[in-house]
Amino acid sequence: MGRKKKTAGKHSYVNRRYKDSLFRMLFSDRQALLSLYNAVNQTAYKDPSALEIMTIEDVIYVGIKNDLAFLIDCRLNLYEAQSTRNPNMPLRGVFYFSQVYQGYVNRNGLNIFSEKQIRLPVPRYLVLYNGTKEEPDRQILRLSDAFDHPEEACLECTAVMLNINAGHNSRIMKQCRTLYEYAVLVDTVRNYLNIRGIPREQAVDEAVRECIRRGILVDFLKKHRAEVKNVILTEYDREAHIRAEKKESWEDGVAEERERLLRSAIRVQRKKGQKEADIISFLAECFELSEEEARECYQRITQEEIL
Image 1 (cartoon, rainbow, N blue to C red):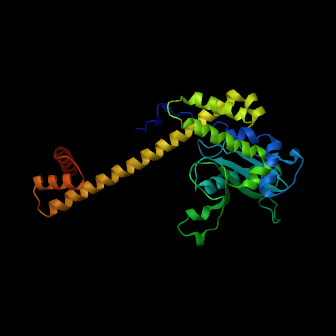
Image 2: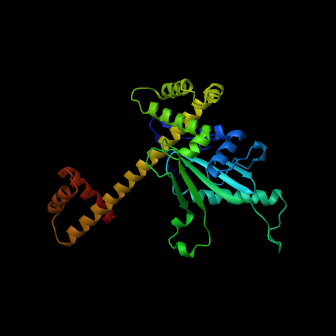
Image 3: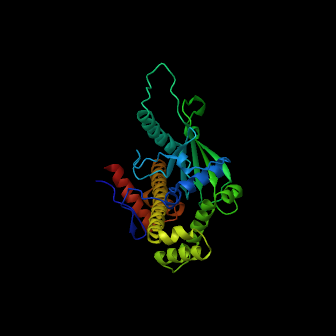
């Protein structure tokens, strides 16, 4: 029997096709994306048409849609925004770059079986972090950190993670106004969603109104207000679902370990020749159970072992 779909609160996370993120909506604008690229790389490109968008709509792993991929000056860039720190981003990058390079080879008619070395754009992988946990301005995430014997690895993928929360990477935020305003919007929405007693839809509406009053992404929010609200609520539901899955996974692990310890304790006590009543008292004391709960555990486990 398959596992039931999990829920986060009263909202089911059933649709596994990842909708456009707020980050992707904003930086799908070539001028904004070029400004971000210049700020990160300390370059001064002026022509947005120099960007060749290479974002893949449907990727190999279910439920994940990469934010933005683009080519400029023989450099293949993958940019992703993350509200949680994810050490598996390099592995995701391997999957993604593999598909992008396959497409690049096919479109350009390159022969990978040729005796002549083919030329490829240099991959660059940037993760923009705006979660609530404190992280440094800049850090490197490496695929090799996942290997048991990294010194033997023939494959590596690195992602540069930049913290774009308030007080971090001020130079980049100053040079790319859209990135700064995106971070302000996310922080404002987060603050309103954390106010108790306010429905989520109302919280998002209030956050958007405040940003408009403060001059944050005014044209964008006025033009795409309904879509922005829908995307924010979808992302919030997705994050809540992930948090619920993590909590459930942790609770499952605790329950499994507790069960293992109960079985082990019963076996040890029986080998010592302890009587049933003494074992039940031992379980009650060690596992902080009532006598009735300890008795039920003892009877269930011994019955299962007999069967």
